[in-house]
Length: 418
Ligand code: UD1
Image (cartoon, rainbow, N blue to C red; front, top):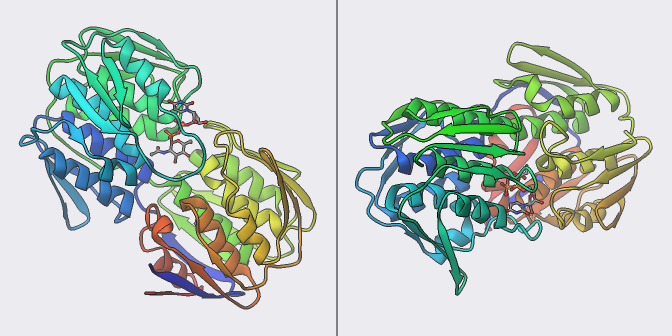
């Protein structure tokens, strides 16, 4: 397993381009099983979650391969409706295939999904939604088995606005008979992106981005070429890196609107933020000032996927902060590693109580999940001295060319095979 060696303390200067959003590409790849012609996902990121989703598509019988920066998919040869344990365990988003497989084959068998170990992450809302469309579900030996003669549209009220459940239900409902209405739907921009893709295929979906999504089922779907939206979490990670290290960085290809909750906090932290078209510039010179509280919420609230990076930032602010994680129970696993670098953080239930220190000091730390791993890299970049960040497989799930991009901004970071 590779590791990063980081000599901290360099300020960051320059421009960096954002990759296509992992959380848009994954459901779009799952949706391509529904297509009846070829699909091209333009400018797809080379990250392991996407590669694993392509492996799953191949295992189902689809042709799925990179063509330069694009992913090309021919779903027509797919004959299989089962995802084995080994593949489902490496990728939580394998669960997105329940909806499309049931819509295409009338059945699906999927091992309980894996992914980041950040809490219980049940799939009850996915399954209840599918049941409302006429799917019968049995669970045994760690597998979920779905079957249906015919999908029929219905009204579905989600108990909480789950991103994955909203997307899964959309993916089944596009081929259901009649109208489906999803209420209390998640409002994340990636769901609007999925709506755009489905409508390019010939689906009839409206309302994504609001709490109510209406889907009129269609009999067949064609193919499409689709360029997914920019990755707001990757963009946010670079902005927080610049805030922590100081300097002057422009993050290109991202709309400020999609991460306004982060930009508000960074301004409170004392950073100067300028937004022009699809470019966000951040400058930080003086000491970072603490914000009293950061609380993760469904979109448009502060994203849970930036919580770890923001906690790392709070660690080197001038005062105290409280970071509250409302979505996932165990998303503070990286905190003991930050403490090895000199952070003063105490976690009680869903709250991290942070007392700012002057700076991090270099240490050897272990990445234990995707965003927690990114937070450790940011801490190492801003630290005094040398750090090693071990187990990069988690970071590779979501950040393509991470060290190249950081080096292009002046960071001293190298990847070493262990
Ligand atoms: C997606 C994102 C992930 C992000 C998360 C929240 C993708 C591929 N992943 O994950 O990066 O951190 O949204 O923004 O898009 N829940 C249930 N039952 C369910 C489903 C969810 O109780 O059936 C709960 C979860 O435990 C959690 C909350 O709902 O507390 C939100 O989870 P959800 O929005 O579903 O997250 P994911 O779709 O897994």
